[in-house]
Image (cartoon, rainbow, N blue to C red; front, side, top):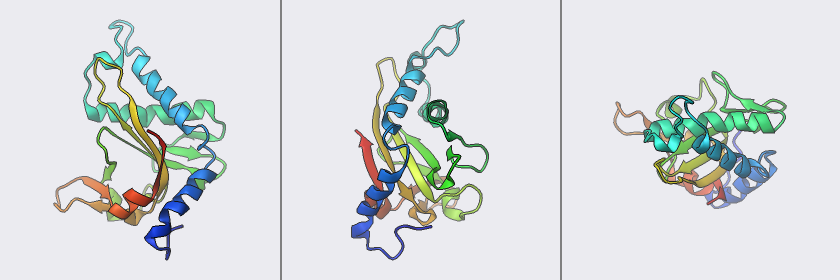
Length: 186
């Protein structure tokens, strides 16, 4: 399904707004993401070390993996009918209607990136559908924040691979980046 097919780019933002409004998690997703982030920051990593995550100076890659794994579990514990995906499923699975399942992307940068495999084919995990994006501050000894939470809809064709054949990153087209996400929190 491509809700943007044969629709001028100037109308994509309105389509995105309608898609986000009808998603069952929209009324609660910001609260769940913020609470997930707080649980990451204030949970203890190890009772022997008695350290919180912001005292460890972990890498940005590891930091991004934490909300990517914690948010789906937090949602599943608080919202009936949603669970963390496994294997080729989306990251957050809607058990009663797969249409509402979401991919989750996290980044400490202003943009959201995917793996280059997103550009090669639409086989394996579906790259088309709802996306939830989270941008965060680097975890340091201060109280880092979530900077931006967005929801939208992407199609497989919205991803562009790096020009270098050895590059492993995919970025969004300008049209998708500008018109296929709604800011839920800033």
